[in-house]
Image 1 (cartoon, rainbow, N blue to C red):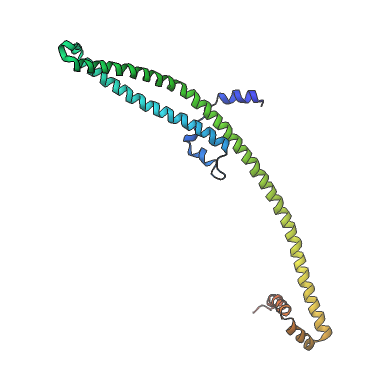
Image 2: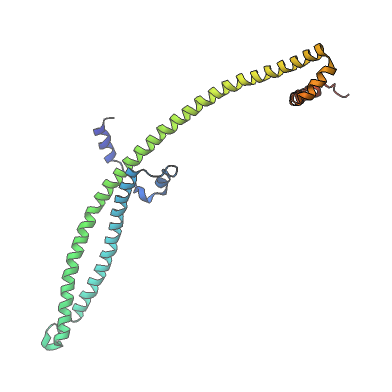
Length: 220
């Protein structure tokens, strides 16, 4: 698939917010997140936190605005200083000023909230692409390592078979040598040399015992 067609197809897919998915975090459990992924994750997290903070701020601002409006409505007949005094009139004017400021802040916050979903979607898609690049790179590395290990196993098995045969041949040859020495030099001479070469004699004896046990006649 060409890059242009791939990008177009990708835009049509709905992707969950990755940083909120624990399975996404576990993708990097073995090696940790690369810098490219961490950078985009941080940007996306900032957008989400900003969205959450704006929603909370909006609730608080609208709640305060409602309270100020109720105070104004409750004292609507007493807006003139000559009837309710300068303090009351000043307080109502202050409420109106605060409401105007709140309206500006609410409008600005709502504008930002309208922009954030597209920013979050764009950054989430970027994070998906970086994550996929990492995962497929890791998959290729894993497959290559698995192939290398498989080749090593085959090679070691061959070497193991060869070495087992070599070992068996060496043991047979050792027993033959010892037998010929016994026939040529006799037991007394051989015993003297066995005492001098105890480690050889001990190993040969160990090899002979299992064979002797195998040759014992079965008890009827």
